[in-house]
Length: 66
Length: 225
Image (cartoon, rainbow over all chains, first blue to last red; front, side):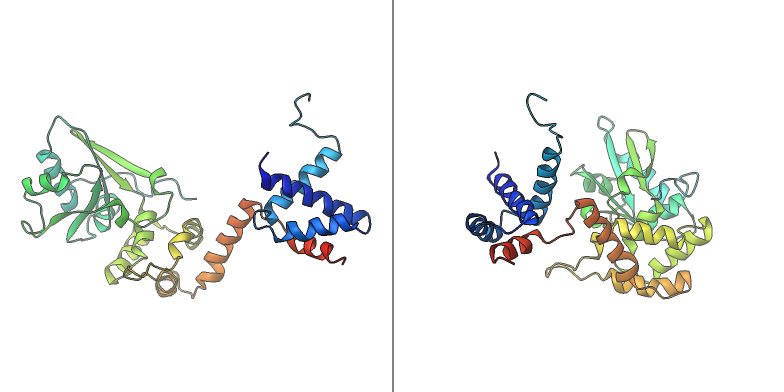
């Protein structure tokens, strides 16, 4: 997997967890690191958020078994 | 976007047309040639035969075209009405120009004539007095471009408004639009507000740029905010 896409998906999951409540220490450390990563762009984060939300809602077009 | 040619025919009986036919006669018959004509000569052939030009600007992939121009006696140092072999890089106009050309086959040569809107847009780079005249002539003969057409076409060609390279003789399309508009359309124009900004916004929308600053949200999340 593209490393920046992987990082963006991790960052997107952190942002989604943040909406649920305060983040734990690990998430905050990861958020700090990923916010400094120039390869993790706003555009990639936007796509990752949409991706994570869609998969959470059952839309899994990319799954091999779909 | 403008698509249909504003005139019906290409008139090769004009001075420019005659020069092109003379050139075609000098070309080796065993090869096919494709030649694009731009500048005022293209307007003379496609719009108004009375639109005068000193020369015929053209370009082609054929690297030896200048040789045949000389053989036809049409080089600048051979004739008072001559053919100027240019580069495609000299035709600085809308990126859509190739999709709305009119072509005519003459022997083994195909002459391509860009749409008048693309000739006029190219003239906005310099906008000398004769270029202003070209706008007036095309408008008088065809009723085009309307203001709306020209604004839209310039939006679609927004990169022409970028600043010139240091090595270039500067072209200032913003200022040239400001000069042109009152003379042709009777009002002032703010090119940044009416042409550039809407085009850049359309481009941004096309990229799907996110509306949120997620990086800032991540920084805030890291700081517990």
